[in-house]
Length: 358
Ligand code: F0G
Image 1 (cartoon, helix red, strand yellow):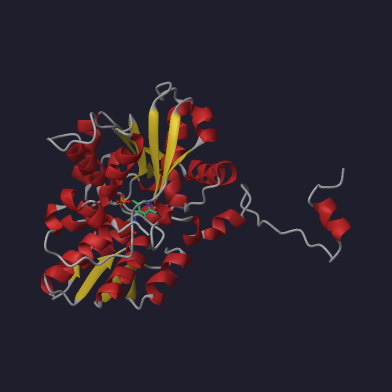
Image 2 (cartoon, helix red, strand yellow):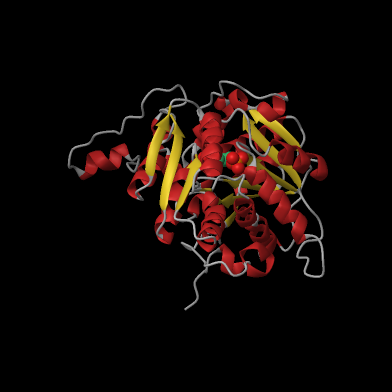
């Protein structure tokens, strides 16, 4: 029987960097592109959701970690390090374990979703909570990578971008061509850089699989929107802790993706992010973490502005699984707690509570 072999083997011909490297994989990639009927109707376009929460550690980071850790293994590295708002650390810890390496993780103090923290710890990472934000953590991790025998596996590592670009190939493989528009959340801006590289490579050469490239629509959280504002944000704040970043490492590349694709980079408020989070889980059956819902919030905001071309094919990447940060689902829109209804062991009462009584 055949099973998906992970992005390095599935896209070997498009990943020349990985030639000759040992393949460290957990079977990442091959995630579903889900037609979103309700969203499509709402915005008058053909909307698909690329559900990256279904990767082995629950986020898109696994696509870049299989390549980064494989390259580290090729170079004989015994240890890797990363800065992270949570998902990178979970992924790095898992793939380092698979490769038999040690993994150091620098996370911002107190702003990490519990699911992500527990993953890094479960996989045996050496986790340090830094008294600073993500940007401070990344500065530290870069210094350590330069001065000590440890490989940096943040998205400033080109191998990360190589792996993550495979998501574009998967979208094209399913749709038969590139979409018209691709929406995604933007934090450190590695992923928008990777998607754009993937789409660009897919549309050129004898082995082209696409006839066009999409407009890239990136969305930052309003309290952490340096690219939109045009300057770094010292104290980024958002409920979407995954993208709570004030000085993205791939800032220039994100601007290039926007310019070359005729796209946009805009911001969405926390309120809109949480509303989109709720809409996705309650109408499409897709549970994501708040940061991931920024792509959907952005799509809906563009719709309100009348900016969605009728009948366009639109892909929204949702980057991480809802179980990473499940608390948000247990709050009402006004912030109060959701309380389950208690019932006795009695069929009639249960039926009434479920509304089955005519
Ligand atoms: N969505 C999720 C769920 C993320 O975890 C991240 C980044 C992004 C979107 C933004 O992607 O940084 O490539 O623009 N998380 C990083 C981390 C920063 O440490 O896990 P980006």
